[in-house]
Image (cartoon, rainbow, N blue to C red; front, top):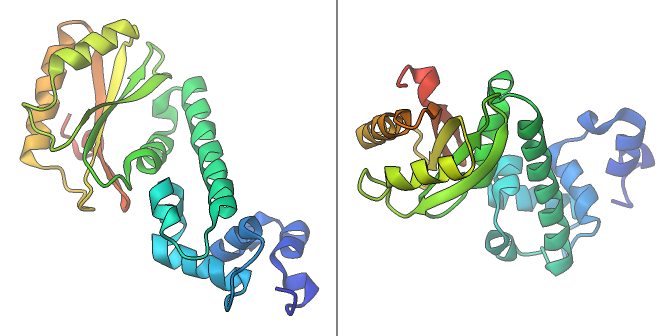
Length: 222
């Protein structure tokens, strides 16, 4: 970095031109601050992004994934995890203060960041109030998800405990595939029917992976 012209160094470039002028690797280099033997900090940043599947993969990475990336010691991992948690909390705060239908992409980004990179299947629920603002997001079931492993009574019980009026269902596909299965559709209909009995509305069901998110509502499957 010291060999680069002053105006092209990430920090000076950011201060003079703004953060949007920086490439992903340059932004990450600012957080890493130092490289490793044989690699400058910008080269290390490029390697980290390559290993984790880009900036999206980095933001979804879990501590154990970061620990396997050569060049990321405890201090660097701690700083990255802190930044990632700040991003998650910022998204959560936005969902708590505005109706989810005003920002459907934020919901997708939030769920992708939270569930997309998990190595196992998880079924999560966003519990919403009558104004469709977030009350809580909870992972209720884990493992291979079928109609028999996701219990409607547990979803109903938790909805009543939180006084939720609306829900968004979500689960991840660790394989990376985003196409909803027939079992996913059947599970959605089962949960909708059960929740209707207690006057709780299911607004959507999202399938997420590290590659993106698919909305049942947008597909006309709700």
